[in-house]
Every structure is written in structure tokens, then in C-alpha cells.
Image (tube, rainbow, N blue to C red; front, side, top):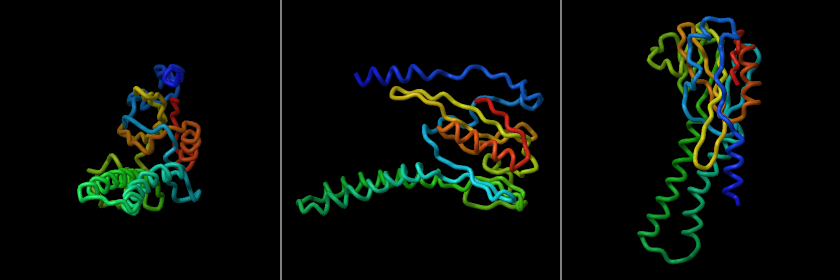
Length: 216
């Protein structure tokens, strides 16, 4: 019965229809791709927009993403501790097995925390957008272009959605990209709460003074 309900719910989610970018009256919009710049995505909100209103805006890891990653780390530490403190005799093999199991969970949680927690910054004082722990400057090589762009090169913001389907679930993940003057697209964030990301994208577009091309 449960499996039938899951399949029914999945059938209610349909792939997006073809999109006509001519509505934006911009030749750049018609020349770029409207398929995802970054495949995959999550089915929950991973980031939330924040700005001081003047010089700096950023996407911060959401509370939900923090809790999600912490669950893995807590399980990774908690299970070995509970097992080894139970007072039951265990041999070396069991200790290694349980410890290894815990390390895997902790490692997955730590990796996700690092990935979701990377700074995503728009800084008018520095004149750059970047994603990562290292702050750029004008001497930073453009080899890191997928995570770095001068604000002056941003032409527009692109908001699209991707239909993700697996054996167990189907959902939309919403993707916010920068469109540069040369047509390059740079992914900013990608998560499952379309209403929140649409509002965040509108605020970012206002902050940057750039148009938002919303295809969702």
C-alpha cells in the first residue's frame, strides 16, 4: 500500500515544459542554455539569502542543512560510543567494525557540512562574486572561473528548475545561475524550495541591479 502511494505521489510531479527565452527581449537570453548548469540537487532548502543592503550579500547554509549534516556526524560518533560503553565484551574485530562504521557516517556528515557551508559571497567593495573559503582579489587567476566572477561581468541572473526522478522519489530542484557578458553561466545555489529561492533571487537581482530571468 505504501509503495502504491509513493508511486501515485511521484506521478503527480511532471517534468517542466519547454521554455521560450524570447520573453526577456534580450539576445543573450536566447543564446545561452536553459538546461541545468549543475546536474542534480536537493529536495530541501540548503541556503538562505542574507545582505547588509549596501556592500555585501551572501547565501548562508540553512538551519535545515545544518541539522541534516549534524545528524550524520552525531550518529557517526554516538553509535560507537554507545556500543563500546554498553559494558558488553567485544573483540578487536568488532571494535574496528563499529569504529569504521561510525567514521563513515561522520565523514559523510563532515563532507556535506563543508560543501553546504562554503561561503557564497557578492562583495561590492572587492568587486567580486566567489564561492569558497579563499577570498579573491584582482590578482586571482581566472582558472577558478566556475566559482569566481567580477561583479562587473554579470549580465543577468538565471533561475531554472530541474526535474529529478529516481526509483524512490521525484522532485524539482531549483537552480540560480549567474549569466556573464560572454554567455558563461556560473551556478550559485541549487536546492528544493522554489518559493524561497525565487524570493532570494529577486533580492539578489535588486542588490546587483541586474535582471532576473525566471524560467520556473
